[in-house]
Image 1: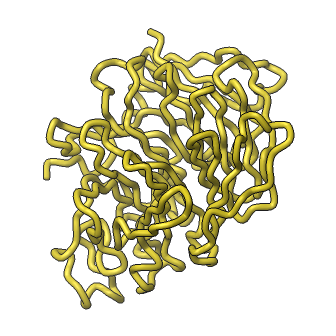
Image 2 (image 1 turned 120 degrees about the vertical axis):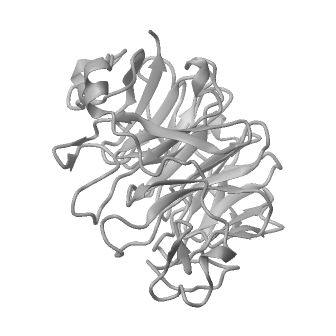
Length: 375
């Protein structure tokens, strides 16, 4: 397929060339975050927007400039009004929810995932200081908490897309209920399966030109340090099957379920991202601030391994596509959250801001970063 299997390790070169600056970061607030350790390509700079967002996960930015951020363990949803301004304040707009990782904004309302439910906060930007009680859009999703957290986003078709992870490391659940990506209308009706055989997707986006859905998927555990790779996948028609639990990374039959169905029956990944890197949030770069070669590339947040003997991930990677949508190159874009085998931060989601900068959430450091290009 001509795809580079493993990420290009540019640590030494980037360490020498990276231009790292702290922009508009109050020393008394952000001094504990070692951003000087983050390595970026020449001309790129990183700053902290806020370090007061505990467990920061999925992000959604409104046209008015309010950044909403979900969390996994805090049960809270945060709002940062005028997030791209100086020293944005942080407000809690919802609490007591079950792993409200995902947030999506549409027509003045904030949609939030909460394990088995999707809830909605109406007219939310006018009520940041007095948030409304969440309205239940649907409660038809499974209640299991294993892979029960859900990144959500509205697609070009106006549907809300919701992944449902497998309730286990490896098992064969009902494919119409688990291990899939689904979509529904904003009022909770017309629930449909978009893709099957998806173990645990925590990030997806739509190609700016073709509007095809692309998503990351986390590979199964306990097949060793070096397999299987996490995946970058592309949906070209509704209902496609991407292999779980029978086949992993396109060519690795599962020891327990692989004999039931061969890998040839399933859609292979567009790119293999590395074993246990925990590829989560991903977005196409649709801005104009970065150099031209970044246009329509994919940025992926790697949360980092938790059960590998030598840790890997904890970085942002870039995947470049050709005109046919084929992944032709992938490389490390930002790294340094992992130092001497110990992480001080874990990237979760990425989001392209209107000015073309790249926002990054970090649930370990409880922070939101902004990466700019200013040579």
